[in-house]
Length: 275
Image (tube, rainbow, N blue to C red; front, side, top):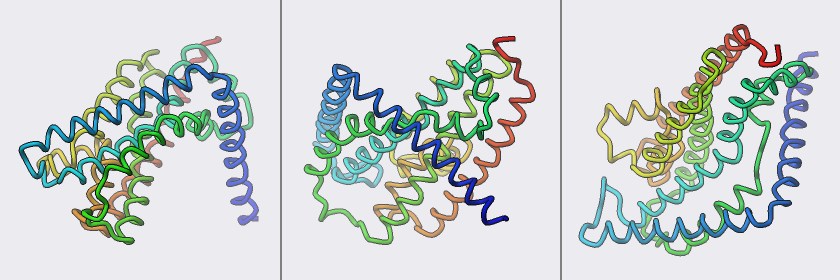
């Protein structure tokens, strides 16, 4: 019975992910003009970013212990984190704010669905990820001198685990910024604040560029640097692999548990917008 229960648990959530992914993909295919705009602007952002990094390294050989190619790799991982987060987390958190204020959440709660899981994965925009990330990633991959980087098979595996844990942590941070909508009816400003942290810290500053206090702060209480700074550091063998993996897994599990508790607490205090 326990085995069947777990099987049903996984099957139900897999069906939610599959259905929502297909629906979002079909919807995105209809926006031809917008698709080209995203593709072009994302690609030119990457080109400008690469040019900016080249300018930074005109008179110096390293910044925060990072060489030019290591910094470009960091930028690549930052771009990957940004578009993956957009594809599955950020837009869903913004939709949750709208759902609480406009009553859409009522419909979700009335259905026999795992509501927290559903609002977290309500929209999975693979097409946005492809058109936003892939063209720029090709430019990054071509320009990086890979032979100069200290990357091993073990560091690659560790970086993948840490990146996934970092995405979970980043989703929790965005969820935490959205929760006040249940009590105050507004959370747009806090959601914007989470984006400011993610963009200005997660994608711009390597972990080694911060002192110990801020490193700990931005991979724990404000976890915007796990999927970028810590992932890159581990990938380049600048941080202890095993310790970083254990830390990231523990942090992500703790955040998942806190998220579940916060969701239950928020629903107890939820006043339907349609009532």
